[in-house]
Image (tube, rainbow, N blue to C red; front, side, top):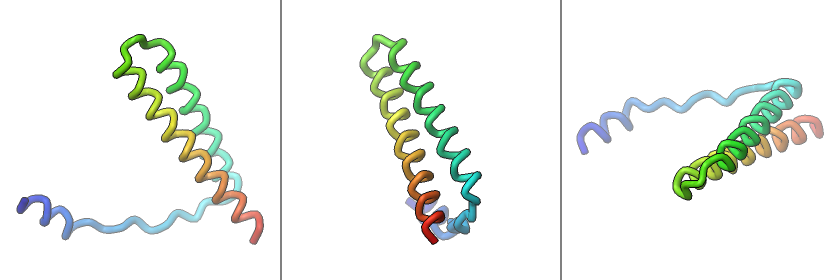
Length: 78
């Protein structure tokens, strides 16, 4: 446990990123592409454990793309 608490004391939060609308759009598109690739990889596997890992990865990429899109839309409304 000693190492855990030492690591926590050294943790520094990252400053928020200030991305432009174009950068947010590019990031969302890249996340969607990565999601599609993970879905294709999941389809190739018959092992349920491997398939679920790729499905989970695809879901996380989709969620990240949605976050980028929401950030972009909120920036356009300002």
